[in-house]
Length: 171
Image (cartoon, rainbow, N blue to C red; front, side):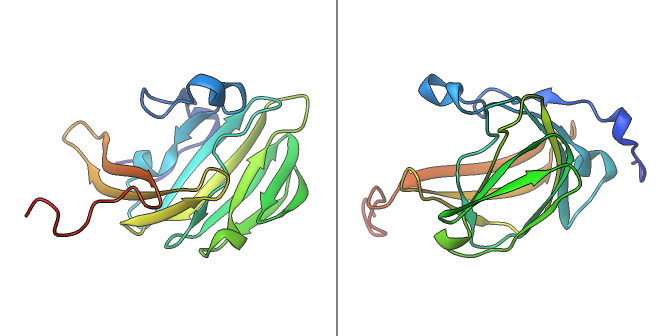
């Protein structure tokens, strides 16, 4: 396992099937990502380089109930939504996104004319609960470490409030 990777050697990949935006969402969301933490064997922190084309966002507005995220803008400019507010961001900016409720929901948007790249760092506590205030959804995400080929294994459940089954249903 490597302990050092140079940013020039990080290959940015399109999202795998099942994680790429489809339908109308594909008009607003797009990103390529380089997962650094897996290459380095990191256990308690996840980090990646995310590249977002002009006019796009990598992820929906969301908040984490468990994990904290930090972003460092490497190239480009845009804005970050945090709760109901919007703030301009540019190369060299650090952004902290601690866990919390919808008031801490965040989304980075490339409002510039060139690709925006940022380093994303997060704690890797699992399971995680995310909320998506714009679409009234929530997600439960669990990571189980890499499989024999080094690919991440996870469970991802995304639902709307009220769509859940009763605990005793079918027992």
